[in-house]
Length: 221
Image (cartoon, rainbow, N blue to C red):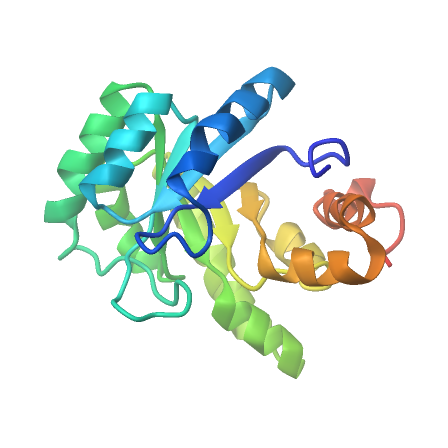
């Protein structure tokens, strides 16, 4: 349904406790995405079973996210450069297999050099501070930090993704401020909206919210 409504790809976050998705979900979802000609992004930590699964099914992108025991959801980026020692071999292995890698980072321009040194091809910006500020109505500073970090990443040749707490309302300012933005991963808000208006209508609204400002046909409802 999401792909029928215009989603450009599917992301699954496979956690060790399988509360978001199960290992058995991944291969069928990869097959569906290939059939439709869209990308599949497997997200998760550095545990060996996840890396082996990514290699086995040949995902298009693997987004590596740090995990704290007991966390409810991802709430921080990689601690760079300290995490580089663990990231380097995993990224090298995935990239050697033709899998594009992305690492989850916070909006700190000074970290982008360390991110590039890991060999990753993309970063995913952690957008929760921006989303929280947007809800309060005072989001200029976190948006500027995201924009500066994205620009620095692009200067270093890194692709720029984003995710966490994004919704149909806070997406348009983000898209306008980050011209290098390649993709966003959205789960919670999209499903909440879908409970009210249906999944396909919701995905269409999010696709519209992601359009560049010059192509946007009014604000999504």
